[in-house]
Image 1 (cartoon, rainbow, N blue to C red):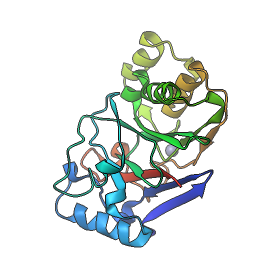
Image 2 (cartoon, helix red, strand yellow):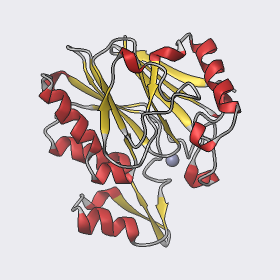
Image 3 (cartoon, protein in one colour):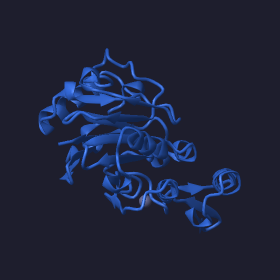
Image 4 (cartoon, rainbow, N blue to C red):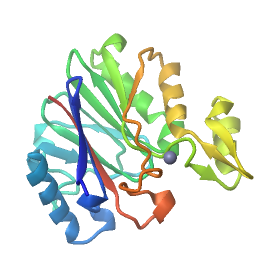
Length: 244
Ligand SMILES: [Zn+2]
């Protein structure tokens, strides 16, 4: 099995690992995780000290990182960036990283200035507007909305995210007033399209461009881990992106 998928276009290098690379989350693994990072580095040619990974919390806090953070979240003894769900950098060839297994990695990129943001968007990050917070931070830093491109990496699609109770319907529709078309009937249950909800956030914030979608559902495609399919103790993919 391939260990990762790589997309190099529009000034970005984007990588998502598969089950073939193994679990990439130290916080849910053992000694094998370090070996998985070594394998990824060897096969992709990406030095481990050029990756910065945050330890997620399912919230909406993010951090600005630079070359001095290289290796954070990657070396077993460097796990200091905790409680964070997004990263921003202005460095080139510095890979921002998050682990996922249903949530979306959302890449926000200023093509002109080579500013880069990465957001971990599950439903909690989305209702807290994490991707919008990162977009707005780039604008604060001097980005022009017209120069921004937004890419959705692998995540759970609008058919696969099935809810058996009213909980998410109440959150999205009643509490946060999202458009009703993010919820769709699925037999006696319903599904939630969190990618569409996230894109709704960004359009509402003024983004008028088109979204680039890698069109991978990690639940439909069993080469990827999925918490919904396999339970919370399953592995996590590593999503990486840098400006080249
Ligand atoms: Zn799917």
